[in-house]
Image 1 (tube, rainbow, N blue to C red):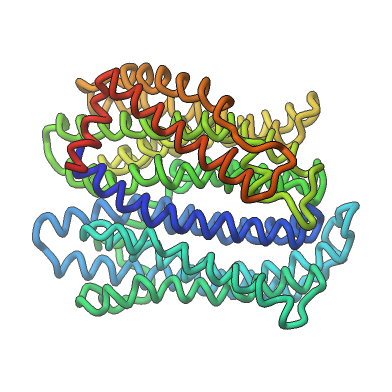
Image 2 (cartoon, rainbow, N blue to C red):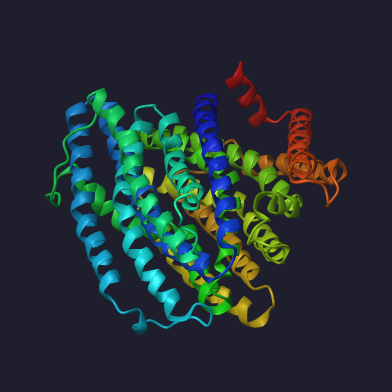
Length: 520
């Protein structure tokens, strides 16, 4: 477990820097465009290529590719591993390049008047949506290739650089917003279009960041363009990928549904609240649950090649305990400090105090599902590691449909608005975690590290932390931004972390002992 935490710590360190840049980027974006229809339209267009990235790059394709690549490396068959990587890169390009070209062309040629226009923005909103889609959707190709190469680097034991890849995109986005004014780009629709162009260029830069180091060490094979032939390792990867798309990506599909429903059924700018809530969710998620899942996946893929599943189960149980250990306090801490966090990060410019309340409520409802989201993603990876590509998609299809139905129910019967959409997503993550954990017992019986113990210890320590947080806020509501950031966010987080770890120490937490061994 100490090796797992070492890799997770490396990922978290670089991911933390990336998330800091990401939050600064979102602050600039919201204060520049506010929560109106231009911002909402941009975010809707940005969601589509990101869904492709999550489904094909970081999700299903990675889940199918990494076990096969890791198995070949474990056998010492480097020629087969290189051939597999080359075929996967070529196949992804062969599939996505014409799709991206077709979507871009259709977006440029389709008359905006043919689309149903929202009340705010009207036809101009649809015209902007088509333009942004034409620019941003091709971003899916380089970012999916980047995800494949990042998976190869993780398997080779390199975790830091792939975790730092999103920093490049954030820097391009931030530069676009900061340079817009000096370049004379001041109209909100033009700012959105300019940012989209910079992001498309940033996608290529991300690909170069991981491709060049692999090329320098001779680990980047020439792409084999065309579809893989039946019987080849690459064909098996893509055949396995097909049913994993939904199983690996419940959260991303639910997020897209939330964005669409908020844009259409609430208001064209309301999806800004959903987007910001997802951003606040992704900050602790990337530092906690995702870091553990990415670090443990190559190990799960390697352990799954053994006939005895005892080692696999032990690895999975320890990863689940580590996920609970880090996600529960992160989720509850963000909920308790939610109002201060949202004010410090986003309030100002076009993002007013009236936008703070719905953002806080939506964020709290969404972040509540963080532990279950992390466990569900961990178990989904375990299924793919053992070659079970059917169970997660079967569960996910039902949950996606159920989530959509619950979304509509909450929108029609309550005044929660976008918070209802977030609550529905959290409940879906809970159901997904429970169903996946139960279903995995057919592959490996429950191990010697019961999740109940990790939940109990984390709950006790988190409760002590949450009771402490309201008493360690040192700045008044009307204080300056810097004073509120330090006194009501940074200081409470630091004190909360200390309280949590002291409680875990008193509880003799095995997870904390493993972390201390890693640092020793």
